[in-house]
Length: 465
Image (cartoon, one colour):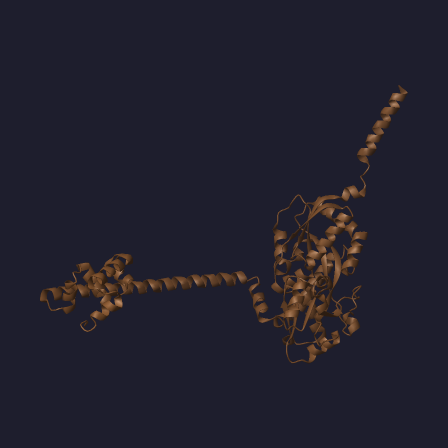
């Protein structure tokens, strides 16, 4: 009996341990699926960070399956608006945001910004690289700066989307150099560093700016000359000085971070925070930093929300200089992107409808006048026909009778001689244009003539009105 009691007690103790002892941390934080929203196209900066995060999460066995969804446009604002408006889902979903979205929101005075979503953590700092064509006479960053200061022509730079970190760097440099805004401009070329480099090689732009990781995938990278790196430190493996090393006391970096919807389930939010805390300290993430030339984040998890506010203020301050710096087409596109663009669009549509209504009324009145004139001409012809038949002194009427034309054909013949078109004749007689055209062909056949011109010429000498 004692032995049986001991065995039962052992079994119950084992069950209690199994039920109440917490599972290992890896089992607690493992996610079956994660969706990453990328506010850009494949190969761009947002997508590069998302791909790196996906690889690290799966390498560390924190997520079984990662799905990346891309939604490019408007510097990331389109994807952000869709993300904010989307209903909650059963699958944890994160959004990759960055300084470009802050710039786009500030530039367009957008009601949608990163303040509308929950900030989780900053992932990296990304140095930007200023480049020129390899055949450019500009050999150094100081030569580029000196040319911007002294040349009479406007300095035209090419970079990513309007309001992006690329444009913000140019504005920060112009502010540092006290350049008047009519001396430089920024040409926005969305699509990543490859598209920017192609535009630089194909055009007459002074310089280009993009992240090194985006330049690195460009197949004709050898045709570019890297002049300066915008960050605090050089990029490992790239023999290019920082701006400070080149003599300009300026450091500026792009960055990417993770955000979630305010509608996210609290359990999902905790799970996302847990896996991101673990992956950011993992060897896989360290390896991604090394391969992309990234720098550590400026803000930790607690500081990240305040960091975003500071970055948004910086973007607004820099973009206050931008109105005169963009090319005219970019400037006017910017105007149309303002919040009151819907009012302007509504007024434009209303004006268009008003113009259409006015034009239709004018056309209707003109058509009515033409119809009245045709009817008056028909009455005149009928009166002339009656006078001619009674007096038998109309040569034209006699000729029409000699051709054995019917009364209807005689009326149409006279209206043709008056110069009325078939459409006008049809309106005056209350018949179709096709019927009038067929009757006219019958007139030509009976008279032995072939066309309106020949028919009119036959009576030219005798036709008097």
